[in-house]
Image (cartoon, rainbow, N blue to C red; front, side, top):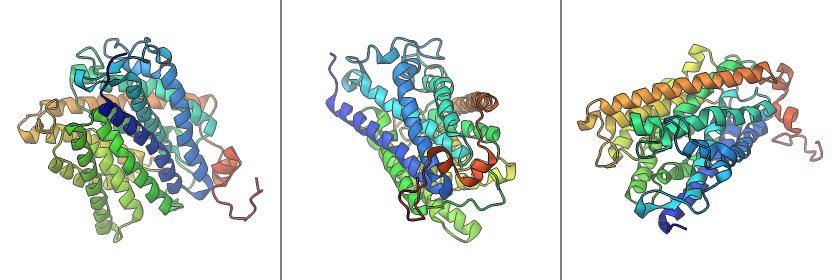
Length: 422
């Protein structure tokens, strides 16, 4: 068995646990944002994502994402069932970690990404159809994009990282822009909720929303700093930048709210924090702290404005996946082309504002366009196929009654005081 760096391995294992913790955090966050009658269903969609994605990742997902590349498009079959990984290592000579630690870390990314999509179709998707969708989407959308961006193999890996040389430290393309584009496609295919733009549809439990946002904030340190795959200066840079951008965006979101509507809301500060964390995700390992501050300040305002566009354009992205994750990921990817500096990461690049010219910015733009178009089109096809076969959207009566009792024979709150109701 090859030697491993114990400190780096411990950090990656801890980061894997932190990122996995984000999906229950997302369940709490989303569960509080929907109406009480569908809160459990919303949370169940995240937990189903954990189960389905884990099974796929073990059987063939890791192999296709990180196996030997085929023309930069998809990995091979050498790690089917995680074969050949038990005694292998990945990483630089002095920073090697067990392959299984890396596989676990990347699994948690796949889980949270597909779970994010549930927010776009809250209150109106069949639970069984969602489970089928998760399996198809991870296989046909997430795994190829993951290979393109994360499978660095010294010029023989994914085409975005090894050939285009666009930079994405922790998932601006793979997680954020991918989920934002896919969420838009899902929202279009399933259509608007009954009462969209007429009924308030306010979050039913704001303390849950704030708790979920805090859980996500906490887990994001593993998400971003863990992507260094070692416990050193780069991880520290990614961690402090994550804190800075997240906090800054939380404040500028509520300032925007105060100026526009006269009130700073708890939903706003939670959403702003998520927007800042999203924006810094691709760039946390390439910016200095002042760059992270600038990006966070901008992300809070732009994302707050972006979530209102669904009312103008008429698509029902229930929990603002497009405005927060899609737009936030876009800002973060562009931020690399503008604000990246080699003083933060010698393996990165200098952005436009650090005398790097437009070369890296152009690479970032190409990657954004390709990933967004591929994710949107592939997701639209998958969702349409499900809708035309087994059906994706619930019946109107079920939507009005709530999905908790329809699909799970439970309710989030026992308002009758009868514990034997079900």
